[in-house]
Image: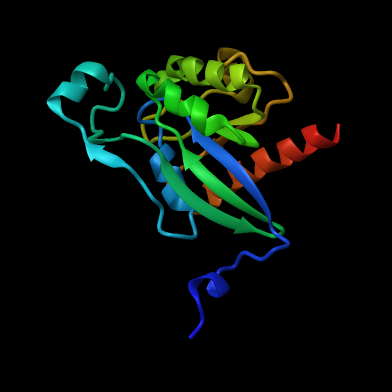
Length: 192
């Protein structure tokens, strides 16, 4: 009988990489971890309570009924690398958790929502202050306004070298393309 470890697709020649999927409340981090993970993802979603609605701003995400109360976790194996994916909660009250989660992370994929673009600033500040390499993926919702990439780049005050993508966090291929862009960006920065 084969052990669970021997059935894993991970081998000793795979480089382990810790990545964080970050963004404001309700932007799709849990959804993206679930779409990407090759294992059953760990998520810490709980039902929003009346008390939570006094703390979490539901503007633009009125249909949201759950919230992440700690972290989400998933794994994705690519040729030569295994990505350990951590979905960080987006509320400022979790900043201490964010600081611990950021330790040892090679990169961050910051999700943004054009319906609430200003909500991304606090997360971008955390990432930049931590000095972690990152890319930004605008998660497209059915009612999201669309803007040219240059307008989004300017609105988010992104460095011209920072990758900016549009994705659908529900779609594994789209989510994977965003992660691959992040990993390629990290590799470029490590070489230069």
